[in-house]
Length: 263
Image (cartoon, rainbow, N blue to C red):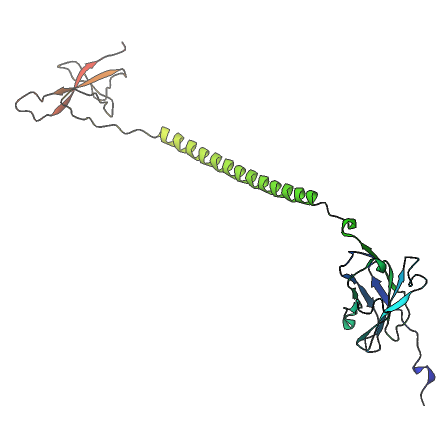
């Protein structure tokens, strides 16, 4: 025994989505999108109905909506003769897409297109509604190209400025680091003792050199006491050139010429 309520139950509502307004140029292709949500699995019983109502009082479709396309069992059936060769089903019912294409669009197509989907047992729901506006090319909304170009150029200039500033900052930091390193090296080298240069021989003249340590000099015939050193003062050193003698081989002999004391 089968219960009579086995085939009856509350039907879930189906939700249909469509573009509120579509603007196309006369003679081009208009795509009217329509999608739906349903809790039931899409089957061959799922059907789509597209209707049109003109907004022009002198049109034959002004009084009430007329079916322009019907889709069922995987096939599309064009309706009114006015749309028979211009309307085409371009959706995928398995993907819950029931969109159509109208080509070429004409000024007589200005009006409202309704999309209605039935997916049993989801059969109740609000139709999708799209207002189609077919206009001339001059009437299409134009994008301000100049503003877009200026915005792109401004962004590129800003990026270039940021890159240049970053490179300049890195170079300044690097130069400062190198300068501090040179300063520390110069300070260390200034504290280190400088090596003395060796005397160079020359036939044309004489050159003075400084000894590496303090000189202990006493009067002729006298010896300085052990551990005694002379007070510091300017000392003049000369070198005697014996290159003029016969037995000399250009030897330079350092000799103390004079000792000048402060006292």
